[in-house]
Image 1 (tube, rainbow, N blue to C red):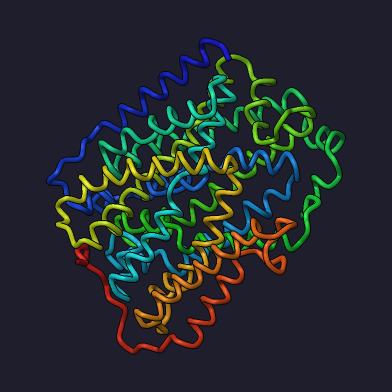
Image 2: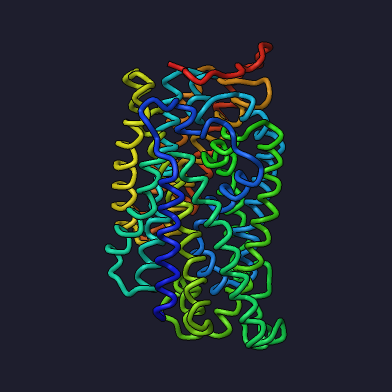
Length: 468
């Protein structure tokens, strides 16, 4: 990288801190201001924040496209668009109208505090940003030549320092900048690639035929599993937080629908660049670094720095959002709810929670060393545990009793966890019966709901901010 590239990155980091520190949280700020920014999120801000937050796995997308081609769109694109559409149609307005602050708030409101705490524990581990912390470390390693652990620590600290100071509003302000950079960087890279190497004819000539098939060489069952994992979108804390923060219910729904279009366009950019990476780079040591390696080969100084910003912005926007979600879940929805502490201390305890969540994220990142493994394990355990209790707390008239909801969360999550561990207990490192962990967990949750849910005539509670 050239000096001008490092200068661009330095300017970006200074700008990020300026936006993040623009307004400091004070002890007297309300819980609503801390967690959902006072419920004033406009449509453009909601779209920019949600789009940038939910697309942090940029290196994983590059790796998958390099290996399997346009199948990336059917695995990491379409199932999530469909799940997001379901969220927009069935949950967005109801979530905003509930007037709560978090998913555990809703669980406590519809069931009881025990269910709220149990749901909070699951959500905490689902939002700890271990996968994205790992990606930051890999990016710093590839771009700057740092050791992985140095990149993990430095990148993570820089991503959360302004969240510690400003809460949710700092997350949104920085997301606006990061949203613009992630699109601009990939548009520039794709334009340069087409201008220098040509269009579709170049790719067809240089790529394996399987890269243009819907399966990419994988089995249909393997691809189908990702459609079930994508159901985690229906319990995605980042979606609920943006809906709770929207200025009204219509903004919440429209924001998600517009975001789906943005994700589809960004997937077109990333998948196209991933195909060029496979066609041009045939001897890279690891496909996970395909995007940085491609940029280093084809982009001149200045544009290389811009693309480096696109990668950093895409990952950092997810680290800060999920770190804040994990921190608020740990503090308010687990510790403070369990100990029934004064809500006026939420800002202080959320800052404690930020330190705890980032510490756990760094440990998990250095332990797993695989982004896909982190996604797989927490998605496979959290989705069956929370999907039905959360979904039917907003939709329909059938409801589990508080005890049945608690049993459903614990038993389905525990079974999925044990099933995941089973591959470490077998000689061939395979899951019991060759079945993915998410499916036994979902079956248990479905059975409990089918036999123990009851139709309720009374309307669902409308919500209140203070639940304990």
